[in-house]
Length: 340
Ligand code: HEM
Ligand SMILES: *[C@@H]1O[C@H](CO)[C@@H](O)[C@H](O)[C@H]1NC(C)=O
Ligand SMILES: *[C@@H]1O[C@H](CO)[C@@H](O)[C@H](O)[C@H]1NC(C)=O
Image (cartoon, rainbow, N blue to C red; front, side):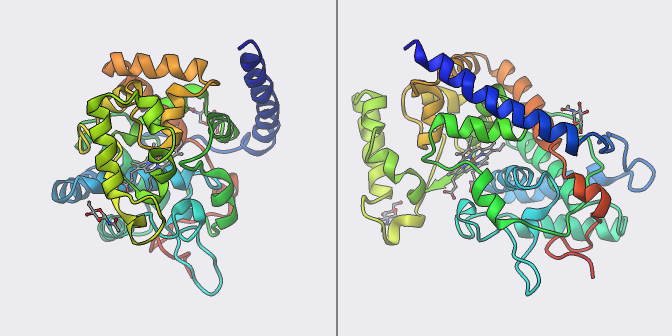
C-alpha cells in the first residue's frame, strides 16, 4: 500500500513541472476572459443562447448531454477554440473523425449551427463559436436541473484543428485512473476537477463499444453480485453483446436511475460499484484512488458540494485557452468552416 501515494506524488510532480513550464511560456500574455466582453457589441448573447437551448433540451434532454460533451472535447484539444466544430475540407482535417471522438459519435453540431444563425442575424461577426459553445454547455446543465454559474467570455475561434491531439489528449473509457489524472493535470486541471467534471456523466448515454470490456470484465466484482446489480448487469449485457458487431452502437444511460436529470446520483452509482464506464468506476475502485475515492463519497453525500465544485471546475475547463487563437484566431461566420 505504501508505494501508491509516492507513485502518485511522483507522477504529479513530473506533470506539474511540465505544466509550469508550459503555462509560463504560453499563457502569460493572454487577455483574460470577462463576463461583460459582449456587453456593448451583443448585449443579448446570453438570452439568445438560452432561448435556443431551451427549445432543444425540451425536445430531447439528450441534447443537453451532446452539447456538454462537445464543450469538453473542444477544450481538451488546443484549448476552447471551437476546433471541434470544424468539418473536414480539402485543406483541413477536422477532429470529428478522431478515434477518441468515436469516429463521428459526437453529436449536437446542428444545435450549434442553429444558435450561430440566430447570433449572426442579431450581431453579425461578433460572437465566437468557442464562446457560443461554452455558454450553451452552461445552459444545457441548468436546463436538466444542474447548477448555474457565470460564463466568462472573449475566446476566439481557431483556424486550425488537430485530430492527432484529440487522440492524445482526450481520455478514453478503458483508461486507468493515473492516465486520466495525468491528462487533466496536463490541461492545468486538478484531481478534484477530474472527479467533479466526471459527474457530467449523470446525464447522457454511452455506446456498447465503450462499456463492453467493463460489463464482461470486473463489473460483477465491483458491484458485489447482489440480486439488484445482477439484474442490472443482465440488462446491460442484453443491450451490449459480448462480441463486437451490430450491437456496437447500442446505447445505455451512464446514470441508470435519473438519466435525464443533472444530479449527484452518478456518484451513488460508483459507491454501489455499478459505474458503466471503467474510467468512472476507477474513481472509486482503483487502488490508486485514495484521493478520488474520498471525493466520490463527498459528492454522493452532499449534492450542494458537488454542484459548487462542478461550477468552479467548468469555469476552469472553459478557461483553457488557445494563445495562438488570441493572436491569429477569428470569429467564424459558420462554426463548421474557417472564414474565407
Ligand atoms: C474523465 C474522463 C472522461 C472519460 C474517460 C469520458 C468518456 C466518455 C465516454 C466513453 C462516453 C460515451 C461516448 C459514446 O459511447 O458515444 C462519454 C459520454 C459523455 N461524456 Fe465523458 N468522459 C470523461 C469526462 C467527461 C467530462 C469532463 C465531461 C463534461 C464536463 C463529459 C461529458 C460527457 C457527456 C455529457 C456524455 C454523454 C454524451 C451522450 O449522451 O452522447 N465527460 N464520456
Ligand atoms: C441492441 O439493444 C437492444 C435492446 O436495447 C437489443 O434488443 C438488441 O438485440 C441489441 N442489438 C444487438 C445487435 O445486440
Ligand atoms: C484563467 O486563466 C488565466 C490565465 O490565462 C488566469 O490568470 C486566471 O486565474 C484563470 N481563471 C480561473 C478561474 O481559472
